[in-house]
Length: 199
Length: 199
DNA sequence: TCATAAACTGAATACCTATTCACCTTATAA
DNA sequence: TTATAAGGTGAATAGGTATTCAGTTTATGA
Image (cartoon, rainbow over all chains, first blue to last red; front, side, top):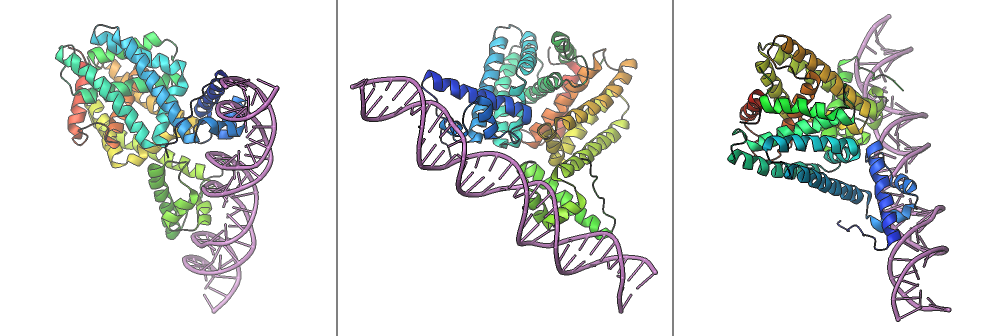
C-alpha cells in the first residue's frame, strides 16, 4: 500500500531518478495521467521499463510524489514573495502575480495539480483546503490590522484562489486574447479587487 | 471520426438511450471518465454491452454528448435567470447564485465539464471561451450603460468565472466549513465584488 | 398472421499497459 | 583484486477493457 519511494544515493542514480521524474512531468502535462504509460515515461527518460520500479512502487506513487513536490514548491515560492511585502494590497498583488508567472513558467505544475480531482479526490481536497488555511491565516491578520474589510475570510480565500486559478488558466491555455502582458492583467484584476466591479 | 449518435425513435428505445445516459453521468461523476468502463455503464443501465453501440459510436462520443448537453443546460439556465434581472448588480448576484445552486443540485455537470481538460483540451477551451464571450457581451453593455467601471471585460469575465467555479467547488466538495447557507455565501462574495477587499 | 426491421444480447476479440523477474553491468570498499 | 551491493535491463506476464458480431427477441404495419 505505502511502499515509499526509494530515493537514490549515488550521483548516477540521482540522475536516473530525475530523468524519470522529468519525463513523467512532461508527459503528464502533455497527455494527462491516464494516457501516459510507464513504458513511455521510461522511453523518454532513456532507461528500461524495470528501472522505473527501482525508484517508484507504482505509477500512482510517482504521480503523488510529483503532486506533493509541486504543491510545496508553489506554496514556498508564493509565500516567499508575499512575505517581503508590507501591505495587504501589495501582498495580494504579489501573490496573484507570482501565481500567474509560476503557471506560465511551469504550466505542468498547475495542470497536474488540478488533475488530482480525477485521480484521487482526497488529494485535491487536501491541496485546496490546506492552501486555503494558510490564506485564511494571512487574511485574518489583515482583518485584525483593519487593512481589509470584515468579510468571511474563508470565502474570500476561495474567491481569491478562484481568481488566480482562472486567470492562470487563461494565460496558460491562451484563452481569449492579450495573454502576454502579465502586469497589465494583474493591474486589471487588482482594480477589481481594490474598488469592486461597479461604479 | 464523426459517426453521429443514433437518436432512438421508439418510446422503448428512448428509455434505453436515457438509461445509458443516466448511468454514464452517474459513473463519470463518481469514478471519473477513465475509471468508468462501458461494461459498467451498460450493467448499471440494465442492458447488454452491445446495446451501448446501437446508440453511441464510442465511449468518447458519449462523453462529448454529455458534455455538450450539460454546457447548453448550464448556459440556458443561468441566462434565463439573469435575463429577468434589471441591474448589473442583480444580474451578477443571480448568475453566481444560479451557478452555485446548479453545481449543488447537479455536481456531475460541473465536475464532468471540468474533466474535459484531461480528456480533450480543445473541448475545455471551447467551453470556457464561448462562455466568456457571452459574459463579455453582457459586461460590455454594462460598461456602456456606465453601470460598471471601465475594466477590461475579458479579464473581468475570467475573474468572475473563477469566483463562481471555486465557490461552487467549495460547496460541492464541501471544502472548509459553512457550505450550507448559499445566500450567506453569495452575500459575502457580492460584498467583495461590490466594494472590493480593502478598507 | 407474418414478413421485416428495429432493438437487443453477451461471449469473444483484439489491443493495451502496469508490473515482474531472471539476469546482466557497474561501482565500491576491504 | 575481488566479493558484494547497487544500478540497470527488457521480454514476458497478468489483468483489464473498448469494441465487434453472429445470433435472438420484440415491435410494427400490411
